[in-house]
Image 1 (cartoon, rainbow, N blue to C red):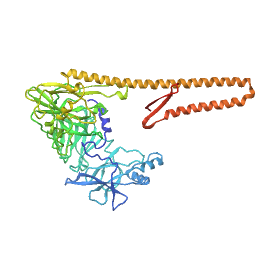
Image 2 (image 1 turned 180 degrees about the horizontal axis):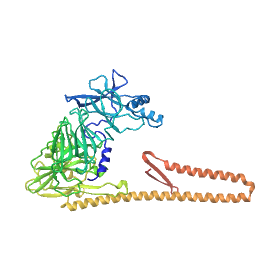
Image 3 (image 1 turned 60 degrees about the horizontal axis):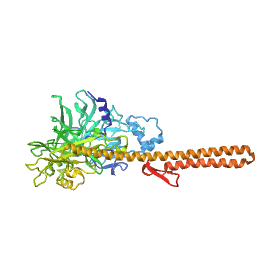
Image 4 (image 1 turned 180 degrees about the vertical axis):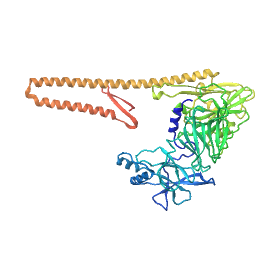
Length: 583
């Protein structure tokens, strides 16, 4: 058993309701709120509805949310009903804090009055009779992280023992309105396998209906995944029959469906402009038949809304995500935006690269989803070979900390009229570099081939072998990095020299003032009658010192816009040298 403590800490730090891929997340921050006719002091959150199962098993119903804006005095009464007690924190601070809070409650979708009072930091209905909630128990100006199972009866009662503490419960469905909400509560790590966690599944009556001690907790990925179209829930788990990694599924009503082949949840960017990510459910089918610097060599096929593998051409083997670390994320998170498709050929394997579906999206899948990309695979150029190389850059300077990385592709010598299918007589030809760019997706199609033919430099004509291509691109990267580093060091050297000269100027002025003061003191001792003139000089000297200090302060804050400052120093030749640098 490894990394159990780490797993628990990470589990506790996960945001709530992250179990669904690509769907809305209930943030409890509030949206458009329409006042209730029966209680104008309350309002119904527009468009926020959750599908839940009825506790008696007779079907489903829809719940909505209400919120209020109580006074500090009102919240003290609510806290007392919950059995809480106010901690010793200045009342003025709490009053100011509570002015920004909006407690939440529940209302039936077609109801006129709340079915549970607006008295909770967060409340999630799991049926028509029960909800998971974090009440305002203690008026202490802090978030109360204990959560409870509360009965939906429009009453505030003294709380019993909490279900748990921290954000360790998962809800799937509900807000999608395509399947009712289902709830899983984490209960700590187990010894079944590496990173396995025990989960309890709650039923609509608030009772534990099943316990699973073999769910694999992913440090940087979703633990649960919901297919809204079908309501299926997926998770990674250890198969008790074989002891190997597999997957488990639950149906739309929370029924356990059994064990299935191994899956993975791949996070990929779908909005380049706003840097938004989503997750795709994939099934592992093998290993990439290459040795590259990619952190993941697993081959996957996408799964559809029913959890079935999406089929490609007969010779399609699988696809693997192309790692892109230019986003500056922790390497463990492994962000992606493009895919490498692998095909079996009579002589070995061939490849295609795409990060965007040229034929548009499939159903409700985006154009960047693996399902849509696979549906457009006939438009991508078949490649004879592929490689990916990367190396850490110099970390001592932030502006020079990018990781050098480049993709290398080998075209065939001849293609059919479509421009993408190699001729039967074709053989592997020239190598080219394909540098990833964070502002666009890589799509190696006929358009890219035409664009490459107009490029400048050796990449236009390519290299005869992969080693020469890698060596050339790498050396160019080193030169660029060294040039950038040299310019930065030269700039810093100028700054340091200017500061040194400024300090020398101040030191000379200080010594000159001291010498002048010494002479004046000696003159005063020899001529006592000139005391007033000496005093005037002392005042002038003090004023000069104050001016020097003030000038230094002005220099330090001059041009501080956008986090930058501008320093100007005397060159002692009637000119100044100015530098702009980060503060």
